[in-house]
Length: 136
Image 1 (cartoon, helix red, strand yellow):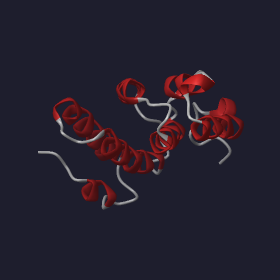
Image 2 (tube, helix red, strand yellow):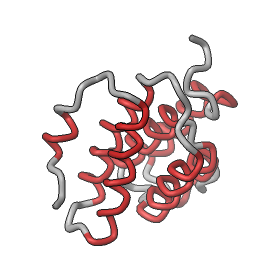
Image 3 (cartoon, helix red, strand yellow):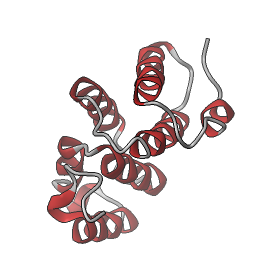
C-alpha cells in the first residue's frame, strides 16, 4: 500500500535510525510499482532525509546508492523544483555521486534558473557534501 505524502509529513522530527531506514526501504521498494509522480517521490524523500539528518548519523551506503540511482534517472535540468529538492536531499544525506552528477550538468542542458541554483549550491556546499554535519 502506497503511503501518502501526509503520512511522511506527519512523521515525528526525531526518529530512531532504524525506523528512518525502514521508511526509506519501504519508499524505495514501492517506487518501481507506484503511480506516485517523481515530485511526490521527491517530497517523500525530502521528509525522510530531514528525519535522517536529525538522527545525526550518516545514511547507510546501500540506501545512498539506491536513492542516487533513482534521482539521477528522474533528473530534468529544466525542472527547478526537482533540482532544488534533489540538492537538498543530496546535502541532507551526503549523496556525493548525485551532487557530482548535478554539478557536471552542461549549461545547455539546464534552464537558467536551474543553472543558477546549481552554481549557488556548489559555492555553498562545495567539498562538504559527503558530510551532512559539516560545520556543526
